[in-house]
Amino acid sequence: MITLISIADRKYLAYLKVLVRSAKANFPEAEMYCVLVNCKDSICDEYISTELKGAALEAFCANLRTSVLHKLRQKREGILVWMDADTIIRKPCNGLIKHLKSCDVTAREKDKSGYFTGLVGINDTKQATSFLDKWNEKMKGKDNWFADQHTFDDVSNDYDVKTLPLTYLDFKLNNDSVIWVGKGRKIRKALKEEMLKWGVEWENAGSDPPREKDASAVLPTLKEWNELKLKYRRVYKKLQNIRKKIKNRRKKNKITYRKIPDTIKSTHKDK
Image 1 (cartoon, rainbow, N blue to C red):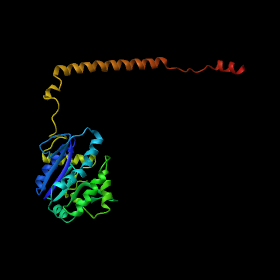
Image 2 (image 1 turned 135 degrees about the vertical axis):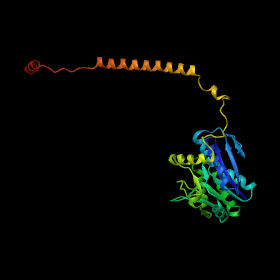
Image 3 (image 1 turned 180 degrees about the vertical axis):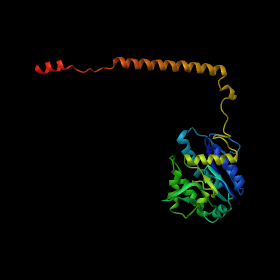
């Protein structure tokens, strides 16, 4: 049994829906487990509420992975696979399954040192469970960005972590790669083009509806729109008049320098 886990808030819900659909198509051997933070959708297996916002909320979601993995390890048998919400499984994962079964823990190694935690495989072995226990323990009380990666690196020094091939965690979106992950603005644009193939067309697809029941109530009527245009035209004209007045005042107050006649210069020298 393989359990595929991911987390998303309202901002990343559309990405997660793409991951769910692409996993169903190309990774049917895995069962999805979706955790949603401050938003609701039919794909939700676990709901978490928090008052955090902005960057603090994003860091909170990123750091949740260890506690969710640790909790599921106690409830479920088989391999646990963590994937970031902005992941697309583009091709069948037969090779990934073989790789996951051949090791205790796997993650993609960075060029210099350490590991990326965008995809982490945890096998159902004593070594893998011990690794997860220590990783979860080190993460307690951590709420800063990249805490999950730094603690993973610390624990990996005491265990044998098998390197995940690039094709299963590709940030550069090569056509031959099995799994894409979106990092950076330029990459995000290409990733969203791929998302369209999976039927997700906007950022917050499937998230909670807006507070207003009727969308037409939010939009101004034609009469209101014309009144707004007239109002802002008047304001614009007033600003233009103020600018003209300021320019005129500057011209009046501008000091003009005249050339001193030679007769005055000579008399000044004589004195």
